[in-house]
Image (tube, rainbow, N blue to C red; front, top):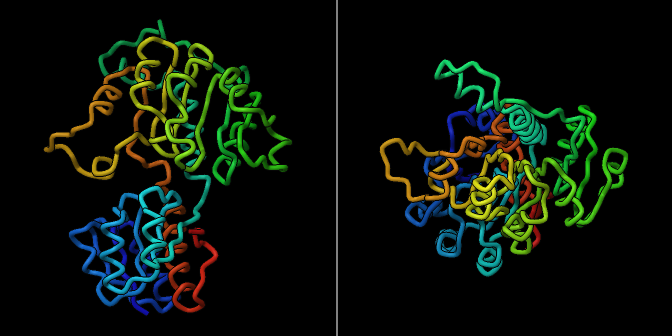
Length: 328
C-alpha cells in the first residue's frame, strides 16, 4: 500500500522505518510541507500524512482530491490547519494523532516554574556578570492558585504534575472529567480568571474560543498573573497580551505558540525578513519566555505521532475507517 508523507523530518526516520515495515506501507517522503506547489506529488496515491504546519486549505485539498487522495492523516494533534469543510466537500476523510501527553504537559509545568522563579531574568543578568539578587525574588507554587483551561489528555497530565507541588488547582472545561475532581475544583471561566495566579491553556482551537485571552478577559485576571500557552497561538490576542505585559497586569508569559507562527517556527529565518510585529515585541520583553512550538518535541512523542498517522492511514485503506477519524 502506497502513502506519501509530507513535512518529513530526519528525526522521524526510525519510527517511519519501523511502522511502515510493520504495516507493509510503501512511503514516499517529501521534506517540504504540503502546499499548492507540491500537492501534485500525491498523484495516484490515496493516503497522505502531514504535520500541523502543512497547508491543508481548500485550494490544496482540491488538488489532492484531483490526484485521487481519499485519506489525510495529520501526525499532529491540532488540526486547525486543515479546512474540514473543504475536506468534506472533496470527499477526503481526515484524522489527527494522539501522542504522549507528558511531552507538552512537562513543558508547560517547566514554563510555569521558570516564570515563578524568574529564571530567564537571572540567566540574562549572569551573561552580563550581574549576580545581584534584587528583582529576582520568586514565588512558591504551593502558595499559588493554578488555573487549567482544558482538561483533555494533556490538561489532565498537567494537573497531575502541578498537584505534586501542592497548589490549589482550578479547572475549566465544557466537559468536566470526573477523575480530575480529586485534584481540581471545576469552576466557570470568570472564576478561574479572577482567582488564578497562573493560567495554563490546554484547549484545542475552535472558532468559539478564538482569542479566548483578550483585553476583556485579561481585565478580569489578578494583577501579576502568569499565562502559559502550549496549545495554539490563536487562543490569545497577541497585542492584548503585549499590552498586559507592558502595563504590569500580566506578570509574565511562557509561550510555545503564537498567532501567525506558520512559516516562521520550525524554519531557519536567520537571513530572512520576518514580518511579524508581535513576535519582535515579545522577544524584547524581559518577562516573556518564547520557544518555537517545541513543547511536543520528545523522542516518545515523535514516535507516537508517526505511529498514529501510519496506523490511521493503514486502517483507512484496509477497513475503510479509522479510530482517529475527525467527524466532518
